[in-house]
Every structure is written in C-alpha cells, then in structure tokens.
Length: 333
Image (cartoon, rainbow, N blue to C red; front, side, top):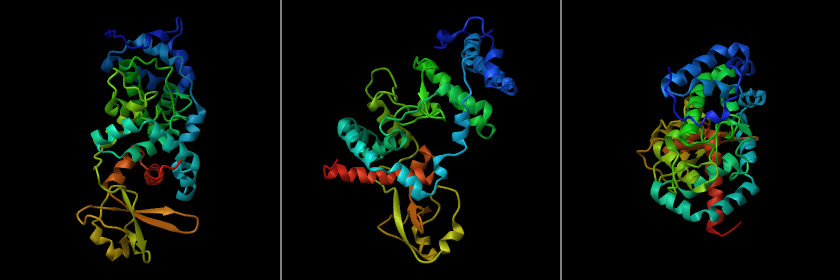
C-alpha cells in the first residue's frame, strides 16, 4: 500500500480512464517500461499510483520531438552555427536585458563570481531572453524520449522522474509546464534535474521561478556554473596562431583541458596572449567556410560545456558575451 502525499497530480485524475489507455498513446510495446516507472515512483517517492496512472493517460507522444533530437543544431559547422546564434537582434536584446536587470546581474556577479555578460549570453542563446522558452508540454517531451528514444532512455527517464518531483515540490501542475523538445525549461532552459540541484530563490519569495522571474533565473544560472567549478576572474578561451598541422595528431573529442601551455610549442602552436603556465588548456578547432580557427579552452571554457556539452555552444556563448559587454561599455544599442 502506497503512502499518499499531496503530489500536485490529483487535479488531473480522469474518472473511469485506465492505465492501458495512456499506454496505448505511449505505444503498446512500451507498456512494461511505463509500468515499471510508475511502480518505482510509488515505492521510491510515495506518489499515489492512481493519480500517476491517470496523469499518464493524458501524455501524447510527440513525433517532432524524436525528429529534432536526431538532428541537433550542434551538428552544424561552426560558421553556420555562429551565424544562427550571434545575430544583431540577439545582441541588441542582450544589451536591453542587461540594462533592464543590471542591479540583479551586479549582485549575482558579486555573490557568485560569474560575469554578468556570461549569464546574459546564456539566456540569449537559450531563449532569446524569454521569447522562445519552448512550446512542448514538458511531460509529453520527457515521456516521449524516455519511452521512445532508446539511445538516451535512461537519461530521460531520470529527467521525467525529476520533473514530477519538482512539480510536486513547487506546486506546479505537471501538464501546464512547457519547454523545449528535450524538456528544458525557463529562461535558462534548465533540465528538471538541474532545477532540483541548482535552481535558486534569489528574491526570497518562497518560489524558485526560472520561468517568469529573471532574478531567480539569473542566480540559478550563476549557481549552476559555480557548482561546476567556475573560476572567478580567470580567462575562458584564447586564440592560437598555427604553423602546420602537427597539432592534429593529438586532437580528440574530450573537452577537459589536458595540456600544459609549454607543450603547444612542439605542436607548432602559439597562444595569442598571456597565460598562466600552470593552467592546462584544450586545443579546439572551429570550421570556417574555407579554413579552420584554432583556439585553446581553459577550465572556464570546460565549465561552459557542462551547460551544453558542445564546444560550438560554449564558443557561441563566449563570443556573444564579448560583443554584448563591449556594447554595454560604449553605451551602444
């Protein structure tokens, strides 16, 4: 017998509907996975089984979610990815967002040590400052990926679990929350587990509102980076001059810095700028139309890739942040 707690799901019970109805919508061959998930939620988190079963009768599988996850934007070459994300409109909106929320951004930067321009750029890249926070019901997106996308089923099943728990904790009706095709939410597009681990009630109003409260969203992003070892006051990425292609022999898909700067000379690379010789770096390539740019990422660049595990994403955030901060310094809009 389960222990009934106020789950926040009760308002969505549909009288007379059985679990099999919901399973049919999710796909007949996914019955067992869904049943195991429901049972685990009951045992582990004391969710009322009848309420959860009723909730899943309303889940709708989204084919477009499956199509999008197979073709992520990060598969683009750098020159196309950059053009898509770093636009005049997004830069101008970033300046306006910073101006509008400069007091909060200043306080958060002081409290967390994460530069305001990085936070502003994250929100710009993720949602164009709240204009595009996602049109999918988060429950639909996560259930679709948990039960219909085997390559990442385990990951999205855990996110589905986290989403139901945060809906209960924050008293948010689970069928009302909307987000991206992957279930990311709010101004900074937090996955549910990230919300649970890193979301902050910065204005102390009793709610962690990353959807409509810029203060909470800004501080939550900063907290995410601090918890992923952001190093205040340190560089992020630096350009490199290249002679030859000897460096290519040690290129790999790992993102964590793995070389001392002194090792670059033997690879015919020279960092443009001063760098702490004790800091490790990561060699990075960014494809242009007819050439390749080479940079080295430092620990803070790696930290940016913890938000989205793509060097293209991290570089777009960095470059957007640099353009916006220059606009702010010179009072341009």
